[in-house]
Image (cartoon, rainbow, N blue to C red; front, side):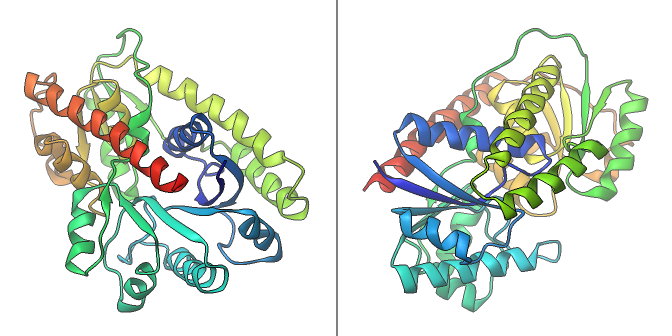
Length: 326
C-alpha cells in the first residue's frame, strides 16, 4: 500500500466547492487502497517544518493539489506559489521523493518556476489551456479534468426556476445580487460565511498546530462537509443556475443542470467551458443586466459533450492512481 502526503489540502477552506473536491479526492485514494498518512493544509505554510518532516519521511509519494494556485497573475497568492515551488525543490533534492502535481491550473510562471517544475515526476492539469502553456515551455503534462467531476449525480427533483450564486471575483457580486432580484431567483454564496464558521476555523487551526495528532481537524472537516452536502442538495433542485464559481459549473455538469457562467480571474472557467465545448454558456459581466437571456436547456450535443468529459475524468483518474502506485 502506497503512503501519500497530500499537500495544499483545501479541506479546511470555508468554501463548498473545496468541500466537494476534497471529498472526491479522499474517496478516490481510499477506494484504491492508497493510505493518506497526512496533509499539509492550504492554511498552513507549505514548508519542511519539524511536523511536516515526519510526514515527508513516512510518505512514498507527495501529491500536490495545484487547484487555483500555480499561477502568477496579479490576483494570485504569490506567497503560496513560492511556498509550493520551494517545497518541491527541497523534497526532490533532499529526500528524492516522488512528487505528483494534479488538479492544477498554470499561468504566468517565471523561469525559476519552470526549472523547479521539471523536477516533478508527473503533472496533471485540469484544462487544456494549461497543458498547451506548459508544452510551450517544454513541460509535459496530462489533461485530467477537475476531480469535482467525479461526483455522483445527486439531482432529486426540480423546484426552483432559477438559482444564482456568487462569483470568485468580488466586484461581480453586486451585479449578480441585482440579477437575482430582477429575475426573482434564489441567491446563494458558495462560502461558509458565518462568523461562527470563521471563528471555529481559527480555533481548530490553533489547536491543530499545537497538537497535530489530536484529530480536531478531521472533526471540523466532518461537520463542514455535512453543510456542503446540504448546500448542494438544495441547489440541485434548480432548473437553471447562473454562477461565477468554477466548482458550481462542475456541479452543474455532473448533474446535467443547465447554466450560464461569468468568467473568473484566470482561464480556469473559460478553459473548462472550452474543454466541454460550452463556450456559449459564458457571459460577459458588462452585458449581464442588459441582455434578455434565454435560459435554455442543454442541447443533445451538449449532453454528449458532458458524457464525454465525465468518462474522460474517470479514465484519467485511473491513470493518476496507476502512476501513484507505480
